[in-house]
Picture (cartoon, rainbow, N blue to C red):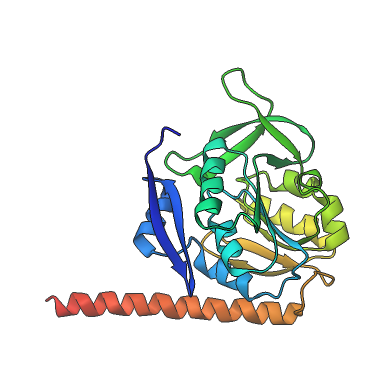
Length: 268
């Protein structure tokens, strides 16, 4: 790996981890500036939901493992992490190893897609390895990456929840997860990158009986649930939970603003 790497300690409540990242990458800067996991409020909601221990959390587009490592340290259910990009996957494997959660997290170097084929990857935004996009077909100057249906990649595991962050290929992932969605009715957290993508994803899942609970995190992740989702909490309680988390996030932001104003006033 030719990139300059750094290791940063992050936390969320009583959950602490060390995450290895590319030194000047976007997510690494967030780690250093906040000392927290990326999208802490979203992770806190996940850890507050009573998932079944025998069902897995599926992390599609795991990147370097921010979400998977947090869950591996805080939750009691297994995690399946899927990441297609070679550099991100090596970081994911290393972060699983150094945080000693190999027995909890299964990492797969593949792309969740709507069929089995070879695809190519591109980084959409320089300096942000979280913007890896997959494209059908493989140009001669790019490496091949295996892609397959999510139904095949998880090898029959039951899904309690699926998080999807795939930079515009959400519809392909959902198309390749129809068997799992119909069988398990997992909670779905899906990050989209345009209003049209958002509408299409929500509409596709609504046809399967899903309801939109909320939009979460800095990435405006859509959170959807099914009446038969494998959790021991009602849809109403889920909405109350996300509302409570939002109020806490606003309160925290106001506290930071107040402290900045106070320090500026004291320095005059």
